[in-house]
Length: 154
Image 1 (cartoon, helix red, strand yellow):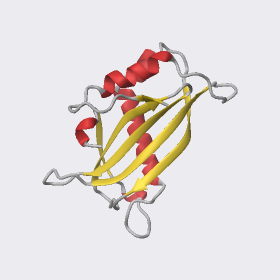
Image 2 (cartoon, one colour):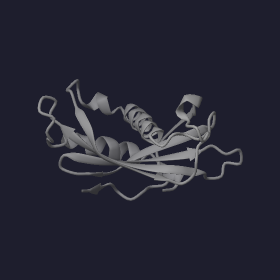
Image 3 (cartoon, helix red, strand yellow):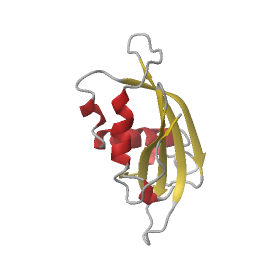
Image 4 (cartoon, helix red, strand yellow):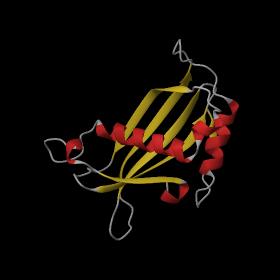
């Protein structure tokens, strides 16, 4: 996706402890970066504010990392996130991880597709997604500079 299709952007620097013996970010860390992106995305969208104090629990059902290029220690990266689909009990979010270049050129390093399922806190079984969830993320994502395809119902 084009960077302009994301309303949420968050930058941070890669720590040495996140790298492996080859001197690049260890593969499992890409999921950590996706978790940071989604956590900050939800915070910026004020997702928890709409819950009115009610506990909401999501479990990651599926995570797919597509790797394009390595990330090195002390590099500044930018993560972007948006919701691309909602279903009866789940939502799908995409995270893009980019390197920050001096000339502003695109430097996509990886994408992470996450399917999260809304679950009951006691049984950890899927339960219907509250109706307002789709609206919260759709409204937030529509703030992007370039309108993207409308969120699909999965």
